[in-house]
Image 1 (tube, helix red, strand yellow):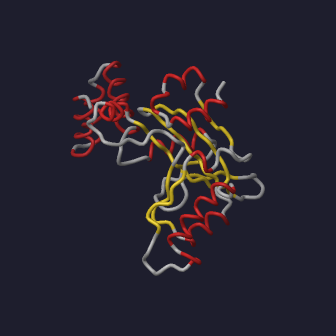
Image 2 (spheres, rainbow, N blue to C red):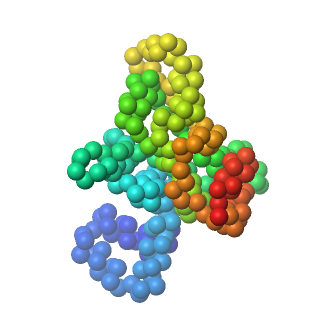
Image 3 (tube, rainbow, N blue to C red):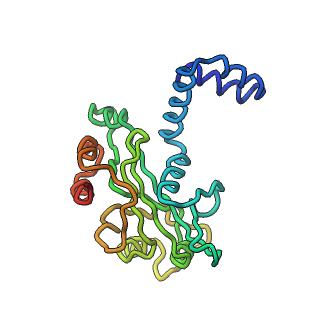
Length: 231
């Protein structure tokens, strides 16, 4: 984070808008561009928050972003006359180039490469039933250093996808019996749990040439399957 951005953040948090405006107006056009770029880089690669990556995914896919922490990540009106909405849940994944280098150098023991995977935390049969009933759409996105690589969309009702979730829920809560306060901590999935069906769509995908430049960031099997769809 450059020093000008650090100072701008401190003034924003401890000073007044007038002081912040004065600080920024004193900067050259190049300095302001550098501050803005550094802010975006820091925010989009934040390991503790996926908000900006969620927003990018939702916006590119044609949904409105839900800024509330409760509820689904995005929504869109199906028709103007009906007033009904479609909802989406976003599962974004970002790979940091520096983390990959640390893994290759032995400084990190493991790293999960892009595999169009994700998870639902503290999952239950009740939540599963609700997601299925809402006709939820899943948006799966992948980033490298904040650069968007792909977005896939499919209905939550995708048979391969629901089968994977059901197996995990059944193992955790046989016959749908769950004690109060207990949860399936992580119901996970990856590309193999939706990509071989006929109801997934490619919302965004880099060209074949660009994808090959990022090949080392991908799970090998996923890369072989995904690149079939690239132009």
